[in-house]
Image (cartoon, rainbow, N blue to C red; front, side, top):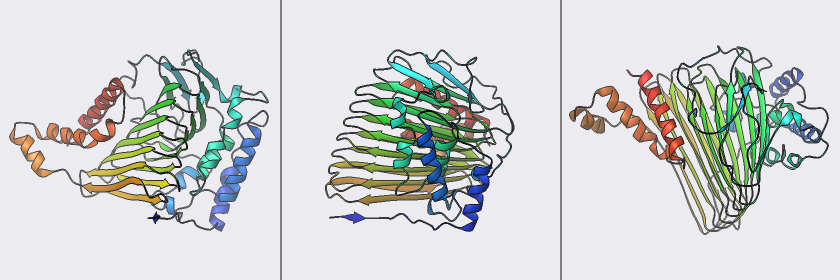
Length: 437
């Protein structure tokens, strides 16, 4: 039996959309005008012109206003210099630093790692390159059935990024560190990652990046390969960012991505995952803590197009002082994708009456032998549990912190590496300590 539980609603182009798209393109230019990426960039530009940039009435933007992401000039953001030790600093890793979207050789480690080839996008200028089969191609696949024009804009205009090809098991993680040095920076980064059959890589990301940040990551995970992604979107208070992950999974492959977000005026994280090989597994998870002028949107689309595949979407949001949280998640099970196991949960903990959480969970199923579920809840802190902790002598602030940590534990558990999980838990505890009361 075929079950269709939702369908995508598209809007027609408008004069305002055309005007805003033209204004944004007028102040931008292609990230490269020669070499292997030009054809892919030109195709992306045509997609942008055809779709137009997002508008508030678009179905998947009706809760997240795109104005600050599409304006010709980036909003300003004060440079924020955290006093605490940089995250992941204790991890043995290859550090790659970008300052306002530009690679910094002085602050980066040598781009060398056994079993891994690492190149800068702007330096890979030959007419033939392995990345030509991926750059912009996964992004283009991800434009249907939901249009993602900011990702296409990135493919056309990206000025820097990494091309990473993994042929074996990487002995240490690659750590991408984004730094913010100018109050008016507008960064556009595009990373392409290809894991060959049986390869494995852990990729770390952290830092404020820029006043406005548009990033795309395309990940091709071949048969039996494993990709781990852990991202921390840091303590800067005025960031506006749109990030996109497009991933394609082969047979018996693994893709796991986790994002921890604290602060930022507006953040939209999109993930578009295709499971194309039998017995593949994709987990996408996140936790965010918002206080005050904070808007955080997780938009996920997972397509099952093979046998016996598993997907999990686990998202937790802790909100206070008027913060806003959004979750839009979809599981699409195509005809023939039998034995699919799809799980989706989105929950919010509202620490006051002014904060809001909006959720749009979706299932669209064309196979009859599946186990798919989704759920979404939103509520205040459990007063009985809080009373229990207080009756055992736990101070109020500490009791509240313990309950917040317990709430997001399911999302944190998606990180396989215990050291990385402990690092993010420490950062979360610090964030809570600074906002007691």
